[in-house]
Length: 257
Image (cartoon, rainbow, N blue to C red; front, side, top):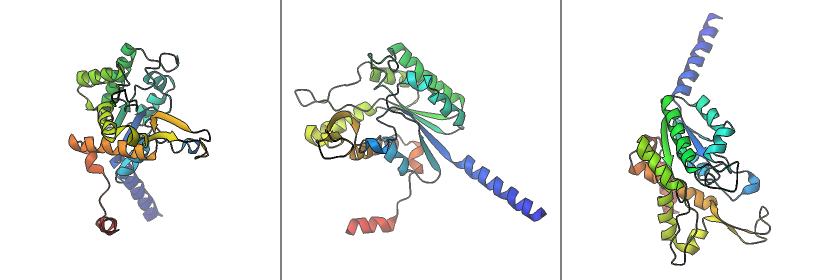
């Protein structure tokens, strides 16, 4: 009996140690990042493929939600739930702006000064928990002007994110500029293949078709997630060292096939 108790106690210690060694990445944002229901497919938030890039030492907790702004994310208690679960040396990726700028949606709209204050609060809260923030501007919408140039689709709000990042000296990725450049390089026709553009009678979820230049499909989400990883590598971020190991056998099969 004594030996059994010792065995169980050792198992509990092992599990506790393993749990403490796991790094959590919380994702706080809107529909461009969030996990989608089957009824919304092929709409895909870039946080979905992002979660599969890491090894077993990382758990990605995607708490982003469709239609949320910093205001509604706080009001609904979603931010508080992240703080409750946040451990020292975890990470929180924050990407808002799409819905904060929606003046005609009272539950979402966040005045500029309040938006900056909310982002600053997020950063201070995470630091108080001895965890780390990665702050991002919202990814671009796909709107080309008459000259074939993608427009800035988050006036004021993207600059506010940049200002907060500078003031707080937080790790910052300018996803608006990065995705603008990427989709600009692809051009009007090819970039449309990354967004929710479906003709009528081609998909049961969208029988009347859809032309949505804000939300990504599976291809677009994967590529945006890859752009995030590329930037993490560029800035030599510690999370880049937690990617899945390369399977050399799989690489050889992929090369020859």
